[in-house]
Image (cartoon, rainbow, N blue to C red; front, side, top):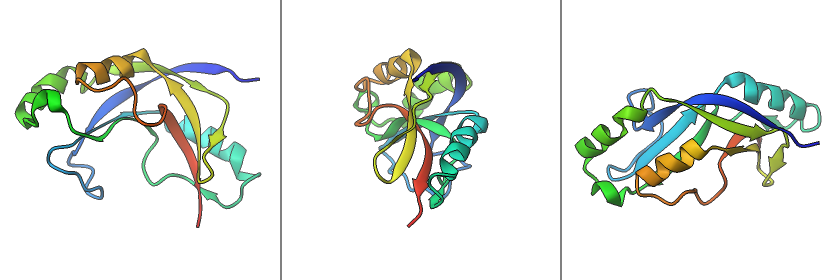
Length: 143
C-alpha cells in the first residue's frame, strides 16, 4: 500500500565552493533541497537484495529544484539573483515523499510533493515543475 511521509530539507544553490566536480554555465542556475541520508539509505537497502547490480548516486541525497535553467526574470545578473535567493538560503522546507519505489530502467527513485518548492520556482519566474516530477534518486544500475 502506497503511503506518503512528511519530512524536511534545506535549499542549496549552485555553483558553490563545495561543488567543483560539476560544470556550470555562467548564465544557468541550479538549486536543490538537501535531505536526510537515512531516507535514501533505507530504500537502497530494500532494493539491494533484489537488484545486486545497483549503486548509490554520485551526489548526496537531494531533490533537484532548478536544473541549469536560465532565469530570464533576473536577466542573468548574479548580484540580483544572490539578493533574491538570500531569504531561501537557510530556509527549512517541508515535503512529502512516497514509499513506492519507481524506476525508469536506469535509476530508482521515489516521488516528492512540495508546495514550497513549486512556490520557489514561481518566485524565480520559472514553470512550476521540471521536465520530470520532483523526486529523490535512490540508486542507479551499475554498468
